[in-house]
Image (cartoon, rainbow, N blue to C red; front, side):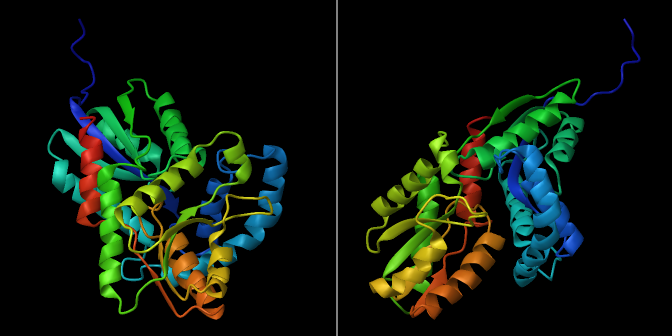
Length: 330
């Protein structure tokens, strides 16, 4: 038997938190690079790929980076020169590491698009001796355009490995009691901190094209399930589901968040809270689209008071939820 076998580390378990992603900076080129990767994903854009690449490269990637860069500049963390999503995802991983990590359990994070990449972090975990890797996509409500594309990229990365680790994926957690409890606590904390009584809470989720729902994507049902469970635990203020961030001319899941914010003051809703349960970290969709654009729209159309309930981010309840989800598989 040969005794010159290369040294191989083994016997450890890796935990990889994976979120959507973020540009490296607010520069036009970094935004364009990020958008190109994101919008080239066929799980995200389900149209003829040849036609879409022509539209994407000739039109969208020519004009959209400037608009997107403007949005990111409004919410960019200047103190650490990074997006809020990157900041909070790193912090989530660091706090989870302190909670469950040891010499045999290695906790890290990656992004589906942008940096740090899934491929990079999977190779790192494997090089550190992780024979078993637990994947936690940071999307409470499963959708093909989020959780499934994370899995696609994980599997593609494993295809290049000679010695593949075993793999376990935590698929969704929209109805986990600890998740619902953490959301309720975030609502109660915000209500206690303001000096006005909300007439309504809008629960805004990222939208998907309606045709994805028609093809059998369960995302719509999971979003409504989360809202229903919140309403069962928090009954003093009504909670209404909406869908945000639509892109392109096709119909998306309704009701639309932006149209709802415009119409609510006419219906007598003058004092509004918004929560975004589908986002594990505050990001451009919550901080700019909702808290800046949405706030302005609601107030301009006759609203009186508006506030955004922060995402669960890196607070202790959220990290405890991750620990509960992950330890089932260790």
